[in-house]
Image 1 (cartoon, rainbow, N blue to C red):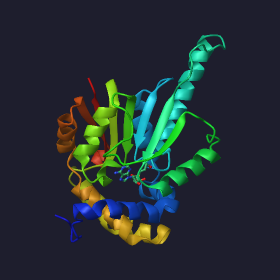
Image 2 (image 1 turned 180 degrees about the vertical axis):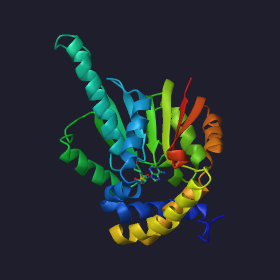
Image 3 (image 1 turned 90 degrees about the vertical axis):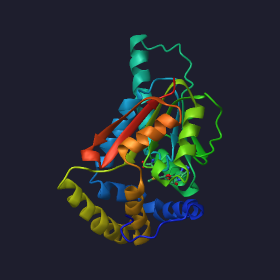
Image 4 (image 1 turned 90 degrees about the horizontal axis):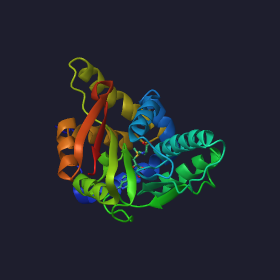
Amino acid sequence: TNFGYREVPENEKSKLVGNVFTNVAGTYDLMNDLMSIGLHRLWKDRLVSKLHPFPGMQHLDVAGGTGDVAFRVLHAIHKAEHRAVGKLGGKSEAKNETRVHVCDINPNMLEVGKQRAHKLGLENVEDLVWMEGDAEALSLEDNSMDGYTIAFGIRNVTHIDRALKEAHRVLRRGGRFLCLELSHVSIPGFQQVYDAYSFAVIPAMGELVSGDRASYQYLVESIRRFPSQEKFAAMIADAGFQEVQYENLVGGVVAIHSGLKL
Ligand code: SAM
């Protein structure tokens, strides 16, 4: 069921998604906090803890918009570096060639991300690479990345299967794929509460905060249309990943899917 919302034809989808994030870029972070009552921060922490970042890592965060995931990855790498330096008695012999790429299709989101990096004092960190690009056609070489993350992004991609194939292509053997996405709640009782919240509260909140009800109605609709946890896991396996697993958080409000390129 589409709950009375218009189905979006595929050729219109990219344009619509582009507009959605152009309209909401400025209030995007505030809305995330409000809608998830701050929980998205913990979910992103969990995503990054599953990645096991390490110094020298080549990482790609797709649909990385405002840099939330990339900053966490970089922070985890810097912490690991300090630990390593501590063990070497203050001397680090290892040449640091860490790169965390942030790829997003929307320049406005990247702009917000760059401003945030500036505020965090990260603007001169050459470890961070901002790239405007499409998840379905990445401008990175085959087998070049140790890790790939995508948080609240794959749902917006027109051809999910193509994005998954691209993730597999750019990862090197042993590379880890991780996807954090709003998913499906199947706990009776909780499901009704969650439906009421998402259909009544979220669009109203969107209107109030960003003056844009339609973008948040689109968000709710797109969550409903996204494949179930099991089906999405099967798609990840179809793209060539091994050891595909998923973890539900808050009863399936979000799920973290993972896979390895072996
Ligand atoms: N990952 C960030 C986070 O968790 O806060 C941003 C998530 S935001 C909901 C979705 C992002 O996906 C937007 O910045 C949007 O521009 C981007 N996006 C949508 N379609 C894309 C595509 N095909 N390729 C790359 N990025 C895309």
